[in-house]
Length: 482
Image (cartoon, rainbow, N blue to C red; front, side):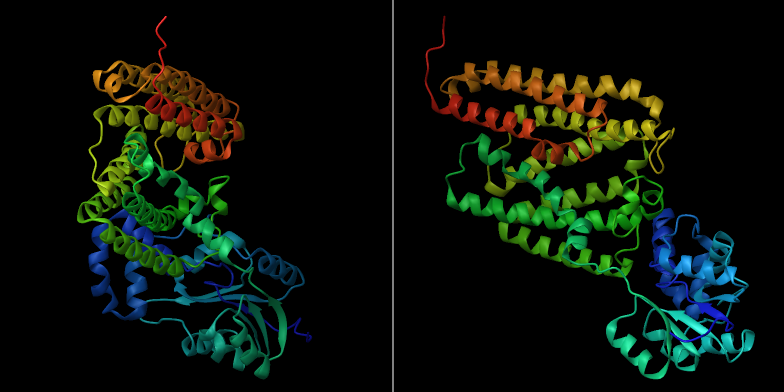
């Protein structure tokens, strides 16, 4: 470490002071606000980089309060500021973003940023620094584009710099401080892709179980391919949805820790991975059947509609969630070429509506405990619990009623060896759904209810017992008449 205490410190923004890319975030916000603007992006690019940033900034702005910041670097800058060191923010981001960040942190004596007709990146940034700060400066940056500036700096501060770039900097410039970026390995990507949510896609196997054709190897292979297709498609939509909701996620007590909201993963990496997952998903779906491709595309269309529009409207979001769950069962039927029972569809709609309401009520209970009054990005208030609670419990009971009517239906009486055993399943459903709602009321429902049910020991035992009873009712012929 060298003595640079009296030399001005110049700090980059994107990738350095904040781990995110503010221009990409602005484009995502632009698409969210009005997707029609995406058609205008190519024409804005014709204005050059500075003109493009100017056009985007004219339509959307970055909320500096919500941006993730590099905490160790900010602490270091505060310490240097307290010692009287001059600190300058120099960034290729639009000046409106840089000014907002400067006002938020209160650290910078001067702000150098992109303005109309002048994109402040690489050599242009170096020239601006020399014009406004002088030849003697220390520069904090993060990537290859900063090499020309580091070569002329008295010292360098490395912030999450790749090893090969850091090696080049060390050869030419003394290092004042090194802030390595936290490693983002496989576990981080598994969280971003929400692989644990793939459990939901086990619903695709329901038609295979209800038709008792799980011993057919061809249909089993088709179901495995269908499961992977839906899972990869779901992961792609989760990534896109997380990018879509960056702003609201960052003010949520738990969602702010998600990889993209926290800045642990770059936005452009997320877009690439989402595209690759979607392409692989469609390839697997094509290997199942053309009809299954249609079901997958329907699921993606409805998921997109949910993410872009419906999730912001009270009750419409939970109705759409129940439909998305039910579509998985329909897709499973298409994958193996069997008809879906109307009883199963009616039961699915009610039980998944109840589970969707469990999820929404769990969020509102958590908000109530934290003292919040309303959700961000969704039209729900804590006071809505008085309506949502009975609605969710009522939907669960409707599912049980439908199941009871199914037991008494003529086709059930002829198809099952001992249909009377299915009443034990009805009692199991009452217990299981009541258990989920009690856990929700206690504030213990921290996962998606379907995921929670498969993690919770009591729920797992109950569901396995119900499946065993269904198999027994189908296979066994017992005289249960009094």
